[in-house]
Image 1 (cartoon, rainbow, N blue to C red):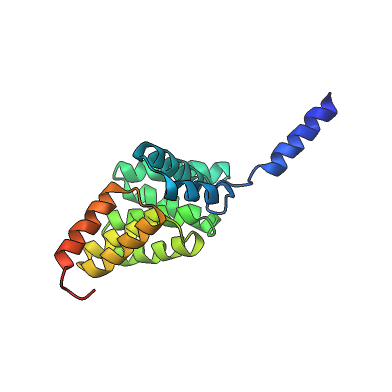
Image 2: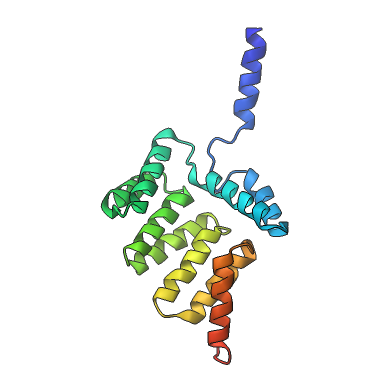
Amino acid sequence: MRIIVAIVTIVVIIASPVAARQDDPRLDGLFAELLSATDSDQAHDLEMSIWRIWTEAGDEDLDQLMNFGIGAMRAGQFGPALNSFNAIINADPAFAEGWNKRATLYFYMGRYNDSISDVERTLALEPRHFGALSGMGLIHTELDDEATALEWFEHALEVNPHMPFILQRVDELRAKLQGEPI
């Protein structure tokens, strides 16, 4: 009996991804389903599944740092959040969501150039990161570069066409820029 348990345990360990992150094999299927989703509830569930995978580093310490950093950022405690995201990036520079969360924090802090730099790192690791793509649109909106913001929002919608706020921003920017060269 112990041999069967050991074999089953080994098979589960081998079949399971080492880390739930941007290189997780489940993401390809989730992105395909997201593109073909026909109802907003289904799309929302798929988005949440993707975000869960992206946010888990697969390392208990890094996962705790991520949860702490997110909580601190939501509470407006930017210093502790920055320390947390810096520690994640230093420990695992190949973890895209560490870069993305720090980019988000930099955006909240008004540090747009730093945010752009971290979004670029995020997208180098996970080109389908619709949060980073739309985040780049938000940054360019803040920089009063609406044409570039529109391009980033449209690119985000190519990956995830189920973002109501981004759809609204695209409509607004297209109407505003109509007749202007982009």
